[in-house]
Length: 317
Image 1 (cartoon, rainbow, N blue to C red):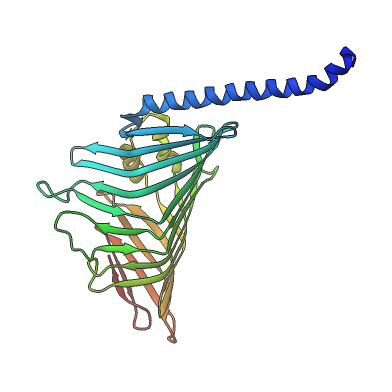
Image 2 (tube, rainbow, N blue to C red):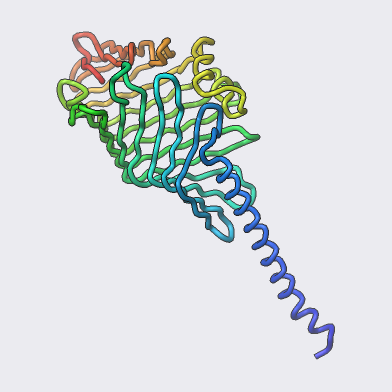
């Protein structure tokens, strides 16, 4: 066999081997860079005021993905009133090892949400959540969050505050949240909850809602995006959004009970205590009855649903 023939036989094989070696080096550099970034972020503020921490990490996914698994993960915001935070046993982050602009998140195990006490001297408020499956995805464009999707299967929530009523529970078959950033400084919001059950500890009796379907738009989203740039913290951004009359414009909220339904719309804002405030109104009816006006009012951290004589009426926690 001549020398030129060997070049044609072994040349492509050698080139392929070289590409594999170079890509392997590239993947290792990307994985090591990501590992170092996580180590630097551990225990520090990822955005002003929000502290991120984890106990252990591992990185895999070769050759085309970067799969990060973090254990003992927490995000916490501390203020004079106490700590607000979220903790999960494990958090997995998946992204492509090239052209990264989309991230997939998965969480497993017990998740807890901590809030400051209602009044000084009282125990902190705690909520425990155990979904059967929890997944989320995020698309980042030009350094800002362009889209976020959250999907929870079989979530079960329990009020774990000291001395809380054991019937303060909420379960659902599935819960979804979708956020899409628009060029006009607004965020489209879509939320759907299937077969929601609110325990008797939140009201006089157990409430069942087979469907909650929300379509809305969040105005002045550039204010809420400010913490991503590192200029202000989350609380200050939320306060600025409130004082500059940021609104949640609800274009359609469908509520279905076993024997009645309501379709509502309206605008909601935040009050000085950062609770939702405002009234949604529309039409609703019990099964077999004539539709009538229904109003869903938000005030002082609570909700109240009421209607005329032909529409469903109920208290909602």
